[in-house]
Image (tube, rainbow, N blue to C red; front, side, top):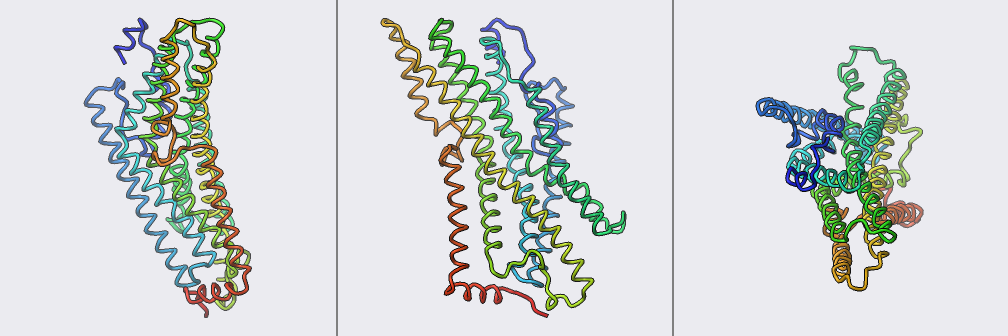
Length: 424
């Protein structure tokens, strides 16, 4: 990057990474970024000590989520033995219990992707320096940071409010149950761990889209007054594609895993709702629990568990929508650059312009290799989002059709009973 600055004849500027230091501090505190950018001004000894602390923090966060996962799995098996697999208590505990597992996998993925993360930030710093020098424009990192902090606050406030409501309604007292008291802090943190990588993914793509818009608007002005050669624009275009490839290398495992658990969660929810034995209003019958007082307490607890499950389902929907729309917007903004290039009429004697236009078109044809994709398997486009929606809708209609089929419903109902419904 220093060589690039020397070529452009500009002074050292505030790097993009430094402008996002608040975002990265939040990521570090949640064990998602256990490293420091290469342009950090800290001494080597301080950096090594800080890295050691960050890796210890990541290990502790992973151990905490493993402990919570073990607890939720035990609770789900207890509900299954008591009420059956497709009971509201069992399904809701399974849905809420997947949260520690998701956090465990995500923290581990980001830990192993630390080098890819640093490479992505280095590429973004290089492009930012060049765009500042050429176009005198830079992403509004202050606004992006404020939006990032706002969504982090929402991710903490919503589960904390729901948890406090449950704490008051169930007449809980402080220090009566240490796990319930710690839950006031741990439960909001679990939700923040869930959504933090998604917000960061959107932030990185938003910065890339800013560069794409800047370059597209500059190219549109070239048809009236030539300021730069097409070769210069092609060099910047290659740098933008390099950033997108680095973002893909960093986030591809996260995208694939996130879409997988989101679809699995939605399918499990749809399957439960379409079952004839599922009861949300009265999940506990007199035959299952004879005591009226215990039945009311357990019913109230299950209703709150269903509320937590609904929150996790909303997070799953947000994941599918955000990943698809973010990747789609970035890919479409990138294609607008080539559209702007094709609007430029090359001069009659300018063979080099025609060659550069062909280079743009050829590079754009390989977008599936460097654009926003699901681990290079398929690109994130409008068709991807509608395909996922159609799969979910088709699955729902199929289950509803099976439920309404008089020949199939008795068989399904008998399987549910054999599956472990407890009577007595």
